[in-house]
Image (cartoon, rainbow, N blue to C red; front, side, top):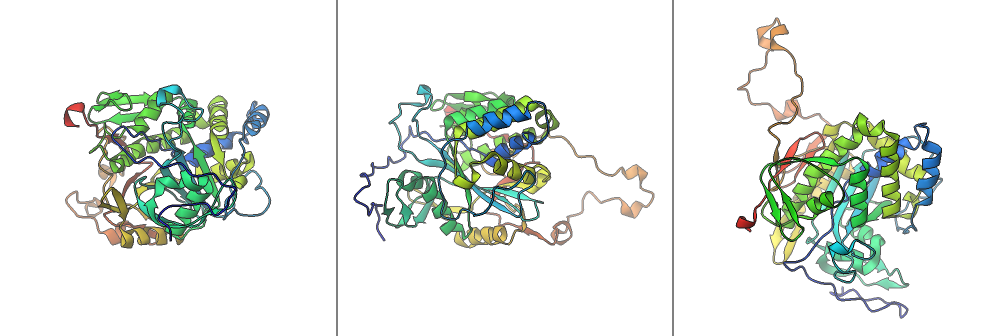
Length: 428
């Protein structure tokens, strides 16, 4: 296989050299639960509010041209209601500056790299979901991909996953993740800077907890320890910051993004969002106007049906996961055994439980709400009162259909309240 992708069609243009990461390298945000996002909003467009008819038309009109995927599911557009069966949807965050705010740099300052790559999986029975992040600097094999301008690109044996968007567009990124995981991915979405800003603003801001000061001159992110409600540019820069969190690596940036995403999901699923027609409409419009969607996702009804499948999943059954990796020169590679176990569990549609920590840029929120438990005073049988010193038996606490992932697999659930671990200029 070739070490350089090259088009086999004479109609294709010569590819630009992909810029390597340097100290000033900027990357795009999460684009988090994209569909959890898109999802929750589309839901309202079907819920009978007075603005629904106008909103549906306006949102549908804002849909952008779509991208055809190799694994697209064929068949009629689903009717309003939960989509039938499970869902695999890939969300990529592009760092392209084309058409974006000038404060993020000139249009030609980067290529078009997928600096965020996330897989949303919804189980067949709609009882659990996972959002799995792939580090941008993870070396992977890239399969033969269609050239958007005609012809095909040769496969590559080893290249960073964030180059796939440059080489073959969204369809190539999907093919690469399919080969890597063994999953079929019929839905995909690409989002840029403007989309992240619009979505965070649409929900009225996302509350985030900062455990230690965040200071990052590269993204202009300076947040004191405490609670902050972030939207627009502030939300985007929080998601982009790398130098200001954890150990300054892309891996700890992912865990920082998961702090934001878990709060975002809680915000979207809250009554204050879903009962507010303007918020839901704004969120739906933000998604369709700022994302490039795969062909069979480029429909308001399909977005709504995925939203319906997501809306009743408990927060502790929405799991954010960073794939297990090990370091090599210039990047990371999958820890193959643990990586394979993760995706075998996803393929088998098992509910996932994390075995590792939250990641290097996240820590438990000491002020998290405390779930109400049984009142020991109301228990007449002393033997029924749990011993606080007792060590729980994993076999007794893990449901039979759950899979506990390896310690190398980090992340958190949407029900986990966490804070970002900041990093000051003095420690950079």
